[in-house]
Image 1 (spheres, rainbow, N blue to C red):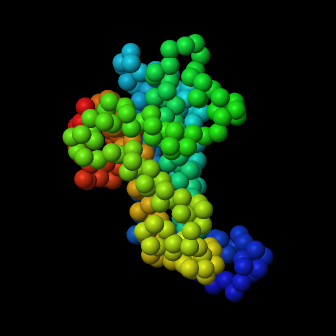
Image 2: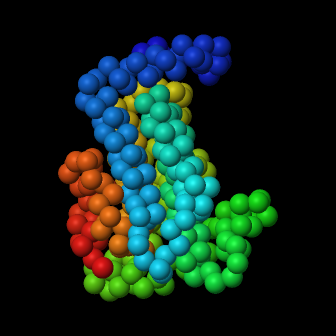
Length: 262
């Protein structure tokens, strides 16, 4: 991998420099394998959340309108996060993970609102957002609705874990990267000057942390959807992806219990 002598050097040699960092990342078969595994997890996220559309229950509006115009963006953000991670842009990768978690939770919130909607057309929270008249809901707004869902509350009572609160705490952790904290809430360097000096650059510990953050983000997304709509697991949305994908998306301590909770 080439070592940048200055940010000016990077700007004047951007494509070749970035390609050099990517080549360094992929030169280790174990790192390439980890990136491919993250891609499989991203497929699992898509399959799992889309399992909502297969629910056969009059309580749920399973039209794909809301998912198509909200959750579909999650795949773009996850792809971006994995590519940036491979290319040595660790802060930007984590920021894309934050975006993925945010829009996936927003999609869940709009879907819950839709299921409670009794009027004509789509619920106003979604339609106003869709036409640009409403900002993406913040977590204070979304938590108020999601936390009181019966399945969320019942799982919290059984397990002692409020998964909505835990997701918000993790979102706040990712915010440290989006808002360029010097160090994140777990004590790890965020800024390039504290991490590698310049970006992009390959740094093995940052790469591993980035992979772990990506996996945690995807796990958080599917567990939020599962705790809100436990019936999704009954559609077997992860069929064919293998046990390693299931265990990664639903890790202990809460994942295995969540999959059987109804």
